[in-house]
Image (cartoon, rainbow, N blue to C red; front, top):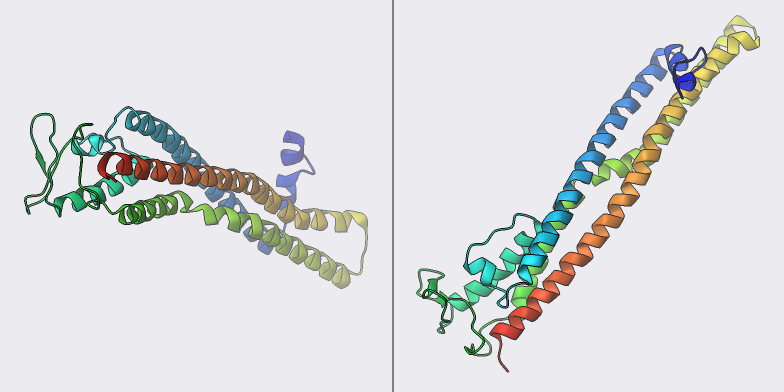
Length: 254
C-alpha cells in the first residue's frame, strides 16, 4: 500500500503531476472523504448509544406492571425509546386529566394539571371506566414520536448517498479533463512518446482512483446504516404496540 501511495509512480506522485484542475478535483474529493468518515463515525456512536439506551429502557419498562409507573415517578432513561414512551404517557395522562376518575397511588394522589384531574399508580384491584383512554389517539402520539426519532437518526445520512453517487462521477470528470489536456498537449507538441504521455494519463486517472476511495467506504457505511435504521424502526414500532397493549390491559375495562 505504501508503494502504491508514495512510490515513484504511486497515487501521490500522480496527483502531484496533475494539472491545476485535476488537483482541485482531487482536493474536493479529499474533503468529501473527510466529511463522509466524520458522518460514519458520528452515526456509529449514535447507533451504539441508541442500542444501549433502548436495552436499558425496555428492561426497566418491562419490570413494572403499570405502563405509566416510570412517568408518574419521574424516572428518566435518556434515549429515543424514553422520548417515545414519554410522548405516549403524556397523552394518556392528559386524557386522565380531562376525566373524572382517580387512581390510588402509593403515598397519595399525583395531580396532572390545574383542572384537578388526578393520575396515580395502577393497582390490580382498581378499575378505570372504559372509554377514558382513547387508544387511537395514544397510537398517533406514539407515531409522531417515532417519526421524530427516525428523523434524528436519518439526519446527515444523505451525505453518504451523495458521496456514493457523486464521488465516482467527480473523479471521472477529473480523469476526462486530464486526458483531454494530455491529448491537447500531444497535438500542440506533435509528439506521442510514451514517456511524455504516461505521466499525464497517470495523473488524470488518479482522480478516478480518489473518487472510488471516497465512494466505496460510503457505500458500505450507507448500507450498514440503512439496515440499522430499519432495525431500530421495527423495534420502536414494536415497543409502541407493546405500550398500547399495556395501557389497554391496565386502563381500559370491557
